[in-house]
Length: 187
Length: 185
Image 1 (cartoon, rainbow over the protein chains, first blue to last red):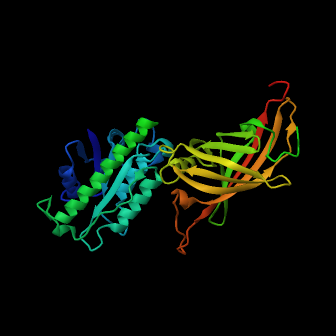
Image 2: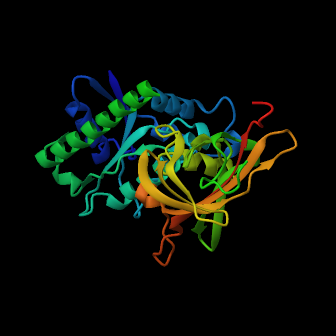
Image 3: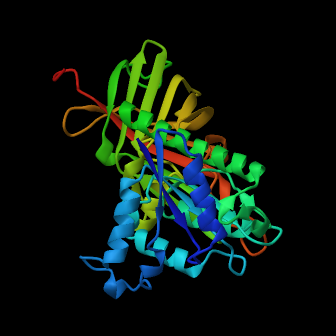
């Protein structure tokens, strides 16, 4: 069973980005399990003084959820042309120490939704940059879901084109996981 | 030993003396030249008649820069992708002595799993006998590559929009090879 962790950068209960991940969870194939991470709000502000063993429980929980996943699917909104502070804060925790952090070499895909005409495309680019800097295996694709409020009904994705592109993004992530497993088998 | 032979060194298999050898790189970054190297390197030079072949490698995990976080970034998929491509490799089956100790090498360089032909130039020293009775030569090679030909594409734009890291990278290999002397072989 291939395990993908879904991390939404939005904390809002009816978040379009969280709904996008729910739609992805329903679209995955029978051999893939997509679990949504729901603890972003509990992550404290990064403070090196607190970055000691044992780490805060919420941070340790996120780190082990990423470590146990074969890949991570991020969905990010866009705040002021960039990613939400709480998402960046969580990645800052996870990134340390850089050489051994759990995102290192982890296949990741970034998608994003916004109610505007650009679909969080800048935030997606920023998030890809941040994830690459911490050593993740960032897939070179984006999925800007524009006018997000028109593409869901009662939280369910109703836009077929977005659904198809989302399924394609998840399939590419699954391909990358399979490739990672092949590479490890050869090594 | 015959100093007029056409090959770059006397016949035989020459082993690298890794302690007294280095493989480094230089690339323009921001307002200067960034320099780094690899601690774990290997190479073998084989001379058979007029034919000389060279095989070399460097472990990506041994990249030596002045900051451990930077070293970690260089090993990530953003740069060399050490997990999938743990070694840089160089092979050459066409090494020519152009006179006066000048060497030109047509070879193949593999970085991040991508193999490209490269032309390498440099010098070779006259064989000497070291204090331990080994025959020894020094081979100093350099080449310039475009890193994006190998899929190493990372950059960070300056406020002007120009890239901060150049694509052209100079690779410098200063290699000492040894061969057991006649009396010990």
